Image (cartoon, rainbow, N blue to C red):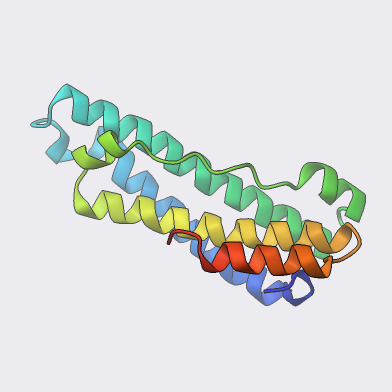
Length: 152
């Protein structure tokens, strides 16, 4: 989706989705209120902690990016401020060994947060590319080819 197609409705929809995921992540990774954690091993507790931190950090980065976009569209941030401070950080992949220790529902939540991050990262990348003078035809074609053959 080209950056010029980013509108308030898309930002609000993504924001709502990120809030729901953040709440789900809080519930899934909050070890204080989980009855089923008492019987799991130490390595599983560590995996829950590590992947919980990665997932919640990922979601907070997404929410921060979306809040910056909202502020920009409301005139509270200039384009220059948004370019300087509104970059979505690079994704940190979950550890496969940790994922193997987690329940399928927890892994699914992590994957959902990764998919949301990928969607927002694509919007961020397109917006920044457009601000840098638009797409060069060859670079645009190379990006489309790379996206078509990127692992899902």
